[in-house]
Image (cartoon, rainbow, N blue to C red; front, side):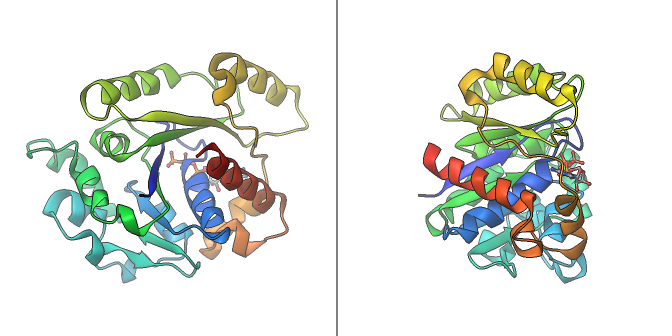
Length: 253
Ligand SMILES: Nc1ncnc2c1ncn2[C@@H]1O[C@H](COP(=O)(O)OP(=O)(O)OP(=O)(O)O)[C@@H](O)[C@H]1O
């Protein structure tokens, strides 16, 4: 049975999509069968892995709102072992359209269960909010990975996220675990980065991944080429660290 990991933090621009795409691609690179699930209406994971929006006939919206069969929505990517459930801007309406529907929080869970045996890992890219889309992702997942950007106020807003995780654990998904906290966009030239690392480790202790993602220009260029870093520039520091993260995720079980 595949492990489902939600990449979540309601703060914008902390590295959720970069981590979803590159963790997914690196897990695939080391031979795991991976499904990337784009639950962000911005659809950046979809375009970042090289899927043209114009080529997307069905997307995650059809699964969540119209009960479409997951198998009809999954697309292969150019990366071996890596499939995707794409998102388009149509998904922006789902947050509101789902409100009056039956079992609105468990729709993604039920859908992913139908293909869970076909993958070793499913990685869900969440939107920057704690609405119904993120709740669906947390309800469907075995674990949540929280990217935290190495900047001032890094911990700000995390108590809201942790509160949402606790509510989901209590009411919707008792099995949900905190997979780990990932420090992202570290600028090693500043003392600030080191202070943030200390602060986050004090708070989350052994939940913080050993792998820390530095700021790396190649990581920010790769999405515009529709490629994960492991394909775009396999020798870059960015490729190295996301491969380290994939291995850490596998070792953690
Ligand atoms: N390690 C890194 N080094 C350099 N640039 C990065 C790195 N990680 C992310 N970025 C860039 O920072 C921006 C925000 O990253 P990303 O889109 O992954 O964040 P996000 O949390 O998914 O954002 P949103 O909340 O909008 O969904 C992007 O332009 C991305 O290319």
